[in-house]
Amino acid sequence: MAETAKHYKNRLGLWGWLGGGRYGLERYAYALHRITGMGILLYFVLHIFVTGSRLGGRESWTKWMGGFESGIFEVGEYLVFIAVAYHALNGIRLALTELGLLMGKPTRPLFPYRSAVLKQRPVLILVMVLAAVLIIAGGLDFFLLGAE
Image (tube, rainbow, N blue to C red):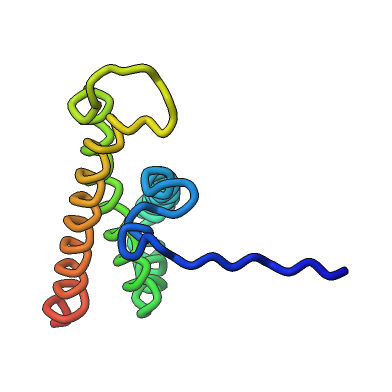
């Protein structure tokens, strides 16, 4: 017999989307924080390498910088901006959590840890909204206003 996949209706509506699915929104924010951190680290290593080419003289510097003038690198710079914007805002949220300012009242640790989630989730959504606004404003400046 062939097994068929069970299909369930989404009865949670918009909250089901904001809730983050199976693992919770906080877990996806954690994964995105890690990914953006690794991307920023990769950018810094590349930046140090290219800046170090300045030791080879003006010709070496001009050669390297000439290679970065294509449009794909402008998109790459914008991706770095997106990573820094999200990583910085989420880092502030994480610091507030580590300081205990976003933790709930101490209770017995029974899953799903409602006291902490009820205080942290609104701040996480606020961070996501602020990051989206910053990313959109940066994109406007980066591609429309800064194209002089």
